Image 1 (cartoon, rainbow, N blue to C red):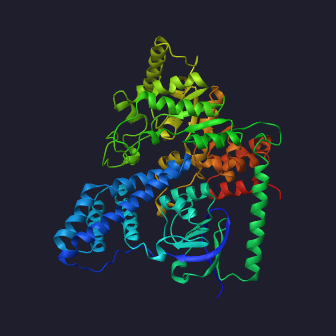
Image 2: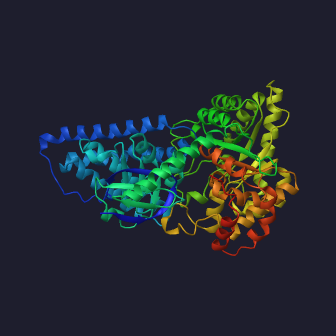
Image 3: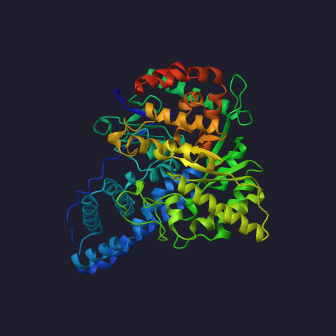
Length: 576
């Protein structure tokens, strides 16, 4: 019987398939014991399951690349660390040997013990890590019962669940899952951002879907509107086919824009840079006609290893990125690592009370002797092979910028004395992601050559709202008057002082925000390669003069509703 569920569209796209319902993991496992002579067999079974999960995560990590690897990799790395935790592993062995428990029940007991420790912590961030523990234990349990057909996705499935972890998404898509319908989640969560990068239709907040949809039900999913239809009728099927045709037509149109300029209707060229983390991303950015790389993340060089990368290893990676862009500028961000990342080297602090506000970014680079200088030497050496810009994250004061600038000057002098061929000038820029940096920018803007606004963290810090907290989904939004005015002020000051300003956060890659950012004065975007063509198309339908004329009305908006009304009026509609 036809039934409609209304959620929030988190990743555009249309899908038609069979429902695969995954109920929330409750870990209500009955206490079971095994005979003494079965202990070794049960241990072997458990160890084989853990090894299987390790192999799966490693294989997925290898398949991922670029910005996708950055987003998913953080979760995979964290899960790998949990899976290798001696306390977890030894505790499981002890429970099976001493208590003669089944592997399933031992997993439950260990999960409950560790979860209790995390839940007793004062800090909300660490309490939220219980979800990661549940996902790791769930993976091991699934491996223990691999014969269970419900353990994996199948081609043509539409997964119906409470939530989905970012680390699962790429794997589900590879298995042929067509779309995801979740009863929880937020359109601004890591999972939603990742689904958009994968072009995997995703609906969140679909109330009652778990209670009323059964395995095998046929579902029609619209990831744009958030509408899910169970047992679609003839009209629903016609609508789905129409959406599918429109999406195919849109893909053809976008592909024709690969070599077209990012130029407004009144003839102004806007620079579109790519966010990247690998040679594959760089190659894609080059093929799409990106103006260069606006944000190259370096954290992947430092994660999941016991020793730090030396200067030569870093240099080779940076050099290859520069060569891959064949003369186009490459902006490389210095290490942005903190206690929330899966760091095995001991570089970042463990168990910080609040990692988001802790020793991360430039703070960590300055606190660890030799760390910044080694990276700067590698970056400056790479400048001999093409234009390199150095971007410093998490800056909040003039003193930090001056310290980095002094280190860069010292490194340049050293390398020239050593006979290295390097650029005459290596531009130094800062991320504007801490509100203090935006507000104090006038005091240190003369110390930098360019600026890049990281809207993801800027919104989070400015509104004191964790973007991964579902309860704050409505509050965490760039569509807040304070956010827009702060972005406008940074752009305006940069223009007045002759300093290029880009936006490299999630806002830059969403074409919905393109007219708004143009109105605020933005002329440089840095975004995931997967959305570059969509933003280019939107720019090509916008009049810059019209957007700038409409800016005062946007900045007079007092609330989100008024900003949304402005966006509807000035959406630079793309004609069919």
